[in-house]
Length: 428
Image (cartoon, rainbow, N blue to C red; front, top):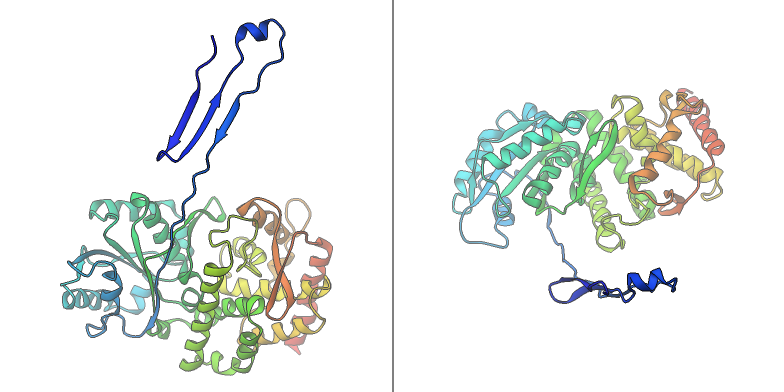
C-alpha cells in the first residue's frame, strides 16, 4: 500500500505537499527507491512599520499636546491607558517628575489614562543584567491589564529603554511602547532605533528582539541634569555615525567641537538631530533593518567597545567605550591600507577636544589563552549575528567599509599605537 500524501497549508495560498509513490514491497525487491516529490508554495507578505521621532522641550507641560497627540494618533477617540516607567537616575534628578506626569495626564484625561503612578526601575546596566528586572516589568504589565491597545511609556537612558522595551516586545507578543530618551546617547542613537535587549551570563544584548516603538519623544530638557561625563559620552555615537555615513557631518563636528564641549544648546540639538536622522535613514533605507545578514552597519567601533565594557565590569560606560573603539578601528583602518595615513589623527583629536577617552589599559589585559582578552570581542561580535565575521572599518572619513577578516597582530599594533603615540601626545 502506498503511503498517504502529506499536506500542510497556510491561509489557503501556501502549501507544502509531499507524495510518496514507492511501496515497501518494491524496496524489499531491491528496486531503486523513489524520492518523494515536493510541491512548495512560498508564503509572502510584508508589514509596513512607521513611527514618529519628535524633538521638543517641556514634554510634560500641560500646554504641550505632543505626547497626547502621538498616543492617540491612530485612534483619536477615547482615553488610552498608559503605564509609565522612570529610570532611577532620572527620578533622582527630577524629584517632581511624578507630579508632572500626573498633572499632564489629568490635563489630557480625554485622551490619556494613567494606570498607576510612575514606576521607578534601576537604570544603566544594572537593569539589563538582571532577568528579575525584566520579570518585574512583565508582572506589572499583567497586574495592571496592559494589553496590545494600551501603552507603556519608558523615560530613561538607553539601557533602561532596552530592558523595558524587551518586556513590551514579548508581553502579549507586543505592546505599544513610547520611548522618552533622557541621555544624549539614547536621543541621538539607540533610542530612535528598533532594538531592545538585556544581557545574559555576561554576554551583552544576548536576549532581545527587534521591535519598532510606537513613537519616540526627545525632550532636550532632560539633558540639563546629566553629569558632564554622561553628556559628553553620548557624542561618541554621533562621531561614529558621521565617520561611516556622512563626511560633512564629521567636518561639522570638528568645527563645532568647542561649542559641543560646553553644551551650547544650538550645537547640541543640531548634533542630536543630525545623528538621529542618519540612524533612522540607515534603518529605513539600509536594506537590513532587523540585521538578518552578517553585518551590524551602525556598530563601527563597537566590537571592542562591548568587550571593554565587559572586561571593566562596566566601569567604562558605553559612550566612553565606543570612543576608544572608534580610535582603535581608525588606526587599524590606516594600518590595513583602507584609510589614508594621518586621517586617524583627525579622529583622535576630535575625541580628545571633547574630553572623550582614546585608550584604556584593559585593552592590554591577557586572557586565559595567552592573547589579549579584548580580541575575544571579535568572536563574540560574530556570534551575536552568526554567519561570517563582518566588521565595519573606515574607507574614508564619512565612508564605512565592511571587512570579513581582522589581522590580529595588526590590531595589536593599533592598540600599542594608542598607548604610546596617542597617550604620549596627550601627556606632552
